[in-house]
Amino acid sequence: MGKIAIVTDSVSDIPDDIIKLYDIYVVPLTVDIDGIYYKDGIDIKKDEFYDLINSGKMPNTSQVSPIEFMDVFSDLLKSYDEIICVLMSSKLSGTYQSALLAKDNLKNQNITVIDSKNFSLGEGFIVIEAAKMACNGNTSDEIIAKVTDMIPKISYTMIFDSLDYLYKGGRLKKTQAILGSILNIKPILVNNDGELEIKDKVRGRKNAIKWIINYMKETKIDFSKKEIGLLHTDREEFMLEIENAIRNEFGATNFIKNRAGCTVGVHAGPSAVGIFFEFN
Image (cartoon, rainbow, N blue to C red; front, side, top):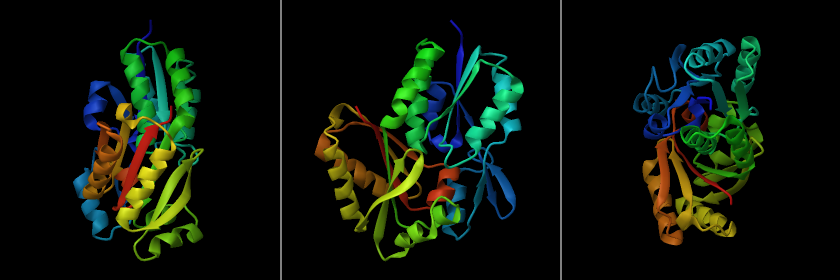
């Protein structure tokens, strides 16, 4: 049975302890701050990054290049028989296309590149499952089948104080971003087949939490037995409020929590919180 490497990008926001536990290989995107380029999570850490954007900096990001993927793939194939590379939505970045070009240039059929059609921990959930299966000795066909089944089942919901960062990063139209400028309005975005879509808007944190609880109730899922992902860009206290509400309402105990990396922080801004889980 072949040894399988699981590769993803830094947008997946997987906690460091899980990355180490399952030997996940994370390829960083590049963050540009005032003409200085940093590899996400390598050249710049989260505290430094959020300090900069809270001071008014407006960074940009660059996708992983085909050459970077070729270097990663070539190196891994010295130790692994196969590579499964699960990446952020191709509708939000060219990173997926870069990986496909790298695979084509290497002319290696033992590399599989998958569009997660997700973002942040939504993508991360899929990667973690693939990595668990690889560690358990599942075949590449089994892992690919499971990942393909999971992709449309991931619920991705994010609450924003402002949509300015998504607009300036080209992820939303100006008319959509205007919602974020209304006093105390919290736009709620969901994943729609790999694209970000405004689902609703509420006023204030309490109403945002109520919206999340009602949305989760409507799924009819038993969250006491479910793994739930929680993410914040620079609003941990709001994320913890949501966690407590979910614990109290559903008896949930299994959470994966993280502070978003620099790439997600560039587009979400310093005041977003995300909730992720898999539908049954």
